[in-house]
Image 1 (cartoon, rainbow, N blue to C red):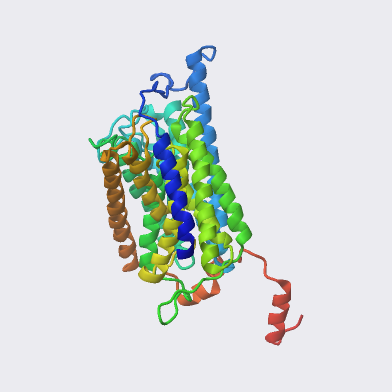
Image 2 (cartoon, helix red, strand yellow; image 1 turned 180 degrees about the vertical axis):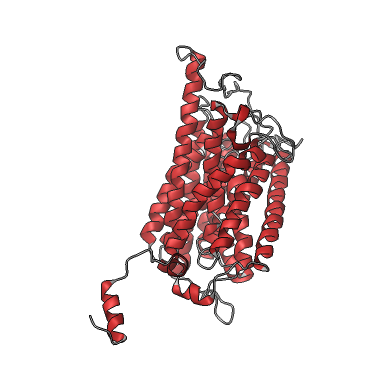
Length: 482
């Protein structure tokens, strides 16, 4: 690591210097307004597609729904990251990823959306306060509207990412009932309440500091919430068998399929092009070009940084670190992607790669928290950095959001308040849930179940068909016949 500092530090400084030289003075620009179908036109039948206004609405509706489909595909990316696990736990992990997609979505329909977006102004979701919303339940009554259905679909697929992230931190030793309760708690309480504070018109967005607490596409709402809840779960569960030696030093637990990990990273990277640009909620907001370029650059910078740092330390290029470096960069840029220039996106990605690796070291060596997929380091640690980076690198060119590089520190203060609020909320809610479950119903599988593998112990079947040669060998050893 120390040998690489002479290369990394000048690169970061060069990017920052280029940014200072090229940072434009904040200019007033024509405001891009997301035009909804008129209130009272619940089915959109009154929209005249022969007019510019009608086409404007149709284009924006299509854009948001297509972006939702891209974000939905990311769930498959998370599923493939199970290649980091031992093969004997893979089916259990896949089942949790799939259940997060379905069960969490139903909870969001029942009441999660109402808690999160009540008070947002969408039809049927007008009632809500600074702390929580209370309208829009089951998308019925006045919420039976094309506008509300559109935003529900887009936000539902975001929710499922926040719920699936912790699975990577608790994999390989968590009881299935405990996992289900945890998923329901995130989907129905933790995620929508914090989401309301930031995106639903709650108190963080209303802070009278800077432009209020901001999170363009979810570094805190999605990634910090998921990563922090995963951290509390992993802490309560304890490490997997074999993770630590008697002297407390960590072991590298065997992964079973790096092909899956690389494919999963590609799928997540691809889906992020809907995750971030789709958060404009409007194809007619041409800032989407800045968002998508910044998204790519930060992910690329995180990947390259993690690869070369680990190559320097381990003398071999580590593909797993490169994949998590890319994901860390993508997580970090998710908050500031619309408000920063491209040079800043590269700096954010570089620092995210380093943040991810430093967090892994901290968890493994100091805190003794076992995080099998690196979910806490990728999503919580890099999500925190992403929120802070907005307060540093926002250049004032979009919506007047200005950070330290423009000479203003108010936005950074607002971002720090949002970070502290998210951490306090998740730690309190997570500890409340996990430790109640731990001392009542129990949260960890028995030792013999973990050694056998959760696929067989919990689901009764293996994810992969057994090798016939090994089956025959086992019969011979036991004295059976071929």
